Length: 618
Image (tube, rainbow, N blue to C red; front, side, top):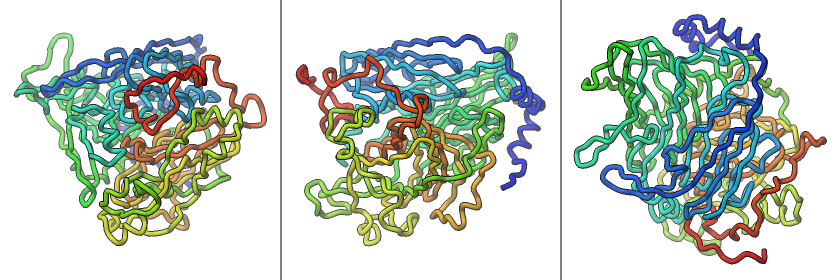
């Protein structure tokens, strides 16, 4: 399929002249690389009091910071992060988007790849950064606690004095969109798990600050301020660390030129609005080229319209403030505000993600042409009975709402051994613990029928589901194509699907039901973007392709934390290849063992306070 030059490429050539020469230089010249380094950090996980909107909350943070510390490395470096758990919760840290080549042991998913770090225990994550550059992030992988345990992970190129395939920016600034919860995050998760309540955050944040739309007894909250100099170019490394919402981001009077997504370069795309879902990262250039003054940077969540359940929409804003050495802008001026998309406008997100294409260069892997295995995975809600196999469903208290992939809701097995360890040692219990993730849903229906959203006759026959530890095995090197199909069962949310250990080529997306006879012809096999988190559009689908070449046990899940908590997850197991270099090595010598950890109970992943039993005999 031949692709024409995109509109975004044309807009880029007008907005930043000389970029073509910069790209040619980037692709054709490389300076001698600097020596690789070992980058070490110590993460002390503890609790501290923070006050917002006149309410003091005990918050779990790393090193007393929210967001947590930024890790900055150069491609080729090694990383060692010493985690000291002084919190009352079991903790793991996931390095979101780091591929962990042949090092699944450091991926940081409790009871999938490791036992969690108990209160008053330590653990060191060690891994290499090879073949990646751009913006990623780290976060706790104990569900809701990632709302306060997160930070940026920045990988800079090793080559050349002009390291980027775009003009070198004057400054690089992480912009982390998050949420402020005026309640205990572990309680919010328990409420959702047992369908006791549907809690909401109290505010949105940019770089941990609520902004002046929120106040305490009439005094406005502090907002993040970005000082810029006229004429300078800034690289914003945007991360959505929120638990619940996709966000639109705008700066009044300014445009973004998106140059990377999920630590993969994209063809420069110029736009006045960014759409970013939980788990995604975007790198965008902003030129300070308008009249000096003060301008609001606004982050606003979107949500599906009724009859979907409606939640409060919390908008936050920072300030972009022009300064120079001789003339400071008037800080008393009221900043200019942008016009934001409507909260129920999900088409802006659809078009934004559809307009991203991969930047073609010599280091980019080709799109695999032949497919070895195809999966069609529906994403939706369902219910299981609280007791027994038969119950009243719908709005009844006899059943619990769960989230599913192909009508199965993920649950951990009742075992003391992480799945990765059982897989590596080929324990006989491995097959007993797992159920194969179906390659298709058990029943075909009109997946995007809006009549399925309210409880009623249509929905009731499709609601029953099951819980299991679902997994899918792939031989090493297999090319796998997955179509994720969002459904309208009880809600019509989009679904940001994150895959650990691999990047995915995003071949196409569409609205309505996927139809292979029609939609395969739309696949972009020339320059699709590479992503680790792919937004499946509301009542729509997305087709991805990846090479299963990283041996290990990898989690695949929705990055809306309410969906993850409810079970929208599965495990992809990639088998060893034929050589030592294509096989998973043994666990590190300091790998957490049974003697240092709890036997899992029903709240093992729920981050609840637990008493540590005597397991000296394990």
